Image (cartoon, rainbow, N blue to C red; front, side):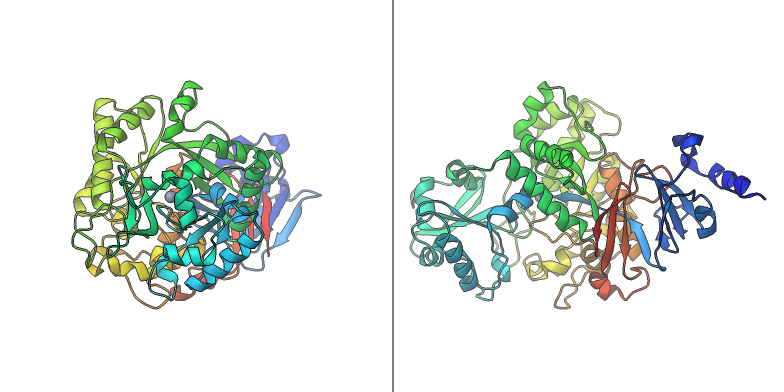
Length: 552
Ligand SMILES: [Zn+2]
C-alpha cells in the first residue's frame, strides 16, 4: 500500500473528514506517543492526535497519525503521558472571582487573628473612609472554632468600613462602620428572604448578615471597577484555570458586564477558557428585548442559561431542607425566591428560548424548582429544554425520578466532600448518602456534571476526581460512600457531560475528529494511580483550540 493510499484510507475512516476539504487536509500539529483517553466510546484509547485549525483532525495509532505529517508540521512526543479531553467546569464564578483576586483581601486564612492582620495591612494602604473588602472567608476553617464577630472586625479596622464575603457567597461579615454606612442598626427588620444576625444574649448586631440582607451593603459599596478591570479579572482567572486543566467554564451568575468582559478578554487574546455565560434573571428583560437567547455567541463566548436562585447554600448551611440541620431542630434553611417568582421569570425565559439554571441545594429547593420546570413544560412543551438544577445537592428517589423524566441536568459540587469535609457533619451521615449524588444520577441515566462553584469550592479537576471517587475528606473521613463513582465515570462527568450541559456535546468534551482541540496532558495516569493520590497528579500542559494555554 502506498503512503498516499494508506493515508487516504485512514482519513476515510474519520467521521470529520467532510469538515476538511481535501486541499486542507494538512494537520499543523501532531501529538504522538501518548496514552490518549478520548471519552469517545467508538475509540476509547489512542496513541496520537493530529490538529488542524484548532480542531482534532485525526486520532489513532502513532503510525497512522504520523503518516499524515506533511513538511512543516510540528510534532511533539508525549513520552507516554496520559491525555484527557480538557475539563469543563459546569458551574463556577470565574469572572467575578478574577475581579475579587484583583482587588480584595483573600481571607482563606486559618485564624481570626490572621484575618485581622491581613485586613489591617490592606487598611494601611487604603485612604481612610474607603472600603476594605475581603472574600473567601470560611468560618469552619479557622482554628478559633467560632465565626468572625463585629468586635473582631472593629478591633482590626475602625476608620474604614470592612465587608467580608463568606466563601459560600450567601453571607457577609462587616464592622460597625460598615453597618452604619449600610443604614443597619439593632432595630432594622430582616428583609424578605434575608437575615440580620443578632447576639442572642445582648441583641446587638453579630456582624453577620445572610442572603437578601446582603443588598443593604451592595447599595453602598461603590462598584468602581473599570471596563479594563473586568477584562483583567478574566485574564487573571484564565491563567489560574488553565493551570489545572480547565478549558471551559460556566459563569453561573453572569451579568451583561461579565459578557462584555469575556468578549474584551477574547479580543485582547487573554481568554484561555471557553465561557458559557449565564445571565442573572434581573437582566433577562433587556436581553430578551435585544433578541438574545441561550446559544448566541461562538465556541469561546456563548450566552448560557438564565439564572434563578431558589434556596441557600450548603457550605453556609442555608440550603432549604425538609429535615432540619443536625443539632439545630428549628433550622430548615432559607427559600430565596418564591415558587411564583421562579415561575414568572421562568415562563418568560422559557418562551423566549432560554435554558434555565436554578440554584437549588436542599431537597425542598429542588422539589420547588422541579415543580416550576414541570409546569413550564406542561403548559408550553419545548423540545430539549435541558433545564438545569444548579448544585442539586440533597436528593431522594422521588426527585431522581422527576429529574430523569424531565431530562434535567444536575451540577453537583465536585470537590466539597474532599475540601469541605468539616461541614459535612451538619448534614449527618444518613443525609450524606443522598448528597452530591453522582452514583444515583449516573445509575438513573442522568447526565450530571463536574462543578466547582469557585470561589465557594476549589476548582482543581484532579481534586474533583478524588472527591467523587473516594468520598473522603482531607482528614480521612468518608462521607456518603454509597455515592462513589469510578475514575472513568468521574472523567466523563468532567468532560462530555459538561459539554452536554451547554448544548455543546457535538463540539467538545471528547477527543474526536472534528471536535475542538481542547485537552490536558497529565504527569500520571488517573486510571492507574491509587485514587487517594489523584489530587497530586500534576497537570503538565493544557490546550484549547490547538494552542497551549498552560505549560509547566
Ligand atoms: Zn454558584
